Length: 83
Image 1 (cartoon, one colour):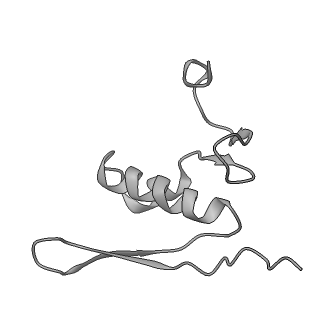
Image 2 (cartoon, rainbow, N blue to C red):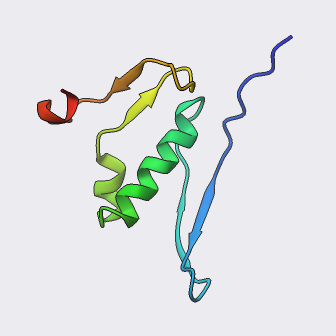
């Protein structure tokens, strides 16, 4: 018998120098949840987006979570990014 993929993965981000809270985050689940967390953190920290824009940014999902899985893209990616 298979167990369902656990999808309750909330996260907290803190400032490394002070330990002060930077953000809390969570998103809907399955194989997308850890991928979504990573993409949100990258948008916030590396891309410098404000929280709402980071949340609204298009995401990709490797549907089965494996390295050989099919990549699905949300609407909003520029065609040159896709090709």
